[in-house]
Amino acid sequence: MRTHLAYENVIVRDVFDLARSECSTHRVAVCGASLGAYHAANIAFKYPDAVSHLISLSGAFEIGDFFDGYHDDNIYFNSPYEYLPNISDPWKFNHMGIILGTGEWDNTRHESMRLSGILNAKGIRHWLDDRKWCGHEWTYWRDMLPYYLSKI
Image 1 (cartoon, rainbow, N blue to C red):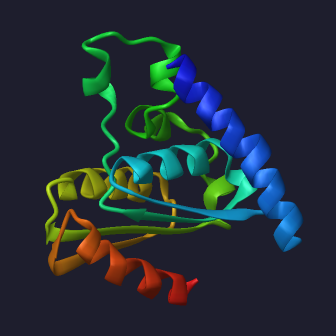
Image 2 (cartoon, rainbow, N blue to C red):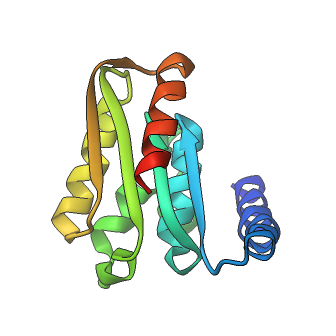
Image 3 (tube, helix red, strand yellow):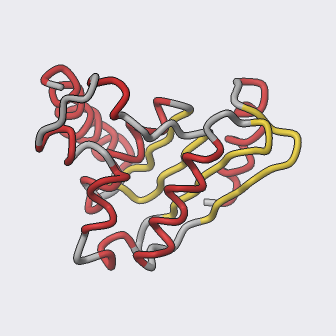
């Protein structure tokens, strides 16, 4: 988990600062596929003041399996399935354009559905795009991402 937190700090501090400077903007968009979608979503939900858009392609958000039963506050605060249901101020995500892309052949489809359910329960606006004939691989993501980018 220490390595993950160090990675997150580099993204949020160094990469975001560079992107904001280069693009003359206050917020940045984040995107990822599969486990990368987890990282993008986790950063977006932890730092909503820094993120304008989140695009998740076939997100794999369940991180508990990586820790062999171990659980502490670091794992809790890096598991959107755990911390999002308990947030008391969902309004701070209202500015964010959130897109969860999945498909009927996606082996992580249930994870996007679960995250969408949590967001719905909290009143957090988002778009769950559940596509026909799409699965969990780059050939589908190559079509999905340009389409989503055209919508933001």
